[in-house]
Amino acid sequence: MIVCVDPGVVTLGYSCFKRDGRKPFAAGAFNIARQRGGMGSTEGTSLHIVSLLRGRLLKIGKKIETIYCEKMEFHSSARGIAAATDVFEVCFTCGVIAGLAAELSASFKAIPVSEWKGQLSKKQVVHRILKRWALSEDDPIEEITLGNVLTWPASHDWDSVGIGLHIAGVF
Image 1 (spheres, rainbow, N blue to C red):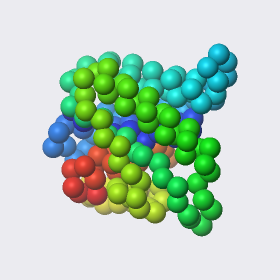
Image 2: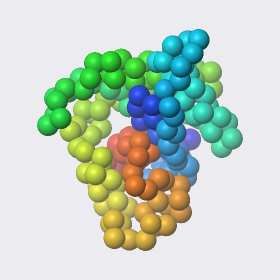
Image 3: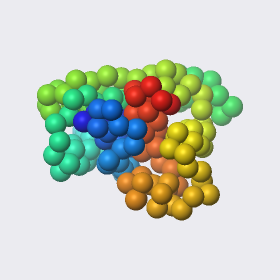
């Protein structure tokens, strides 16, 4: 299986695909409060959220071929420039995910935001995914979320699905 991950400062979305899959068979999002304590906020939060991902992947129990992780970039948008501290924190989490890949004997690939979605908003990403699946936001939630595999309203797991579709060449 391949695993696609969209890390955030205190969130992380993931989706799991068969190698040639167009829809994830497992997905989800973790949203945690910033961890305080011995290791500091960035390290504690990153280690905690990736440990949640590790537990979920071990529970799924399938051999992981590759973990693809969204790589943050500085960019300008209507809301301004991505905050430098946020970019550094997410990059740290991306590094912890690379360590998880090594631990699980999987390869690791960081996918720059500009490579897979450019400046698309989350709403545009969801619209494009649903279009690829021949669905719309007017369809039953059960169909949109693939039987509640995905969260609704959309969270980081949807961006992880977008990464998976990009890898499959259909985004």
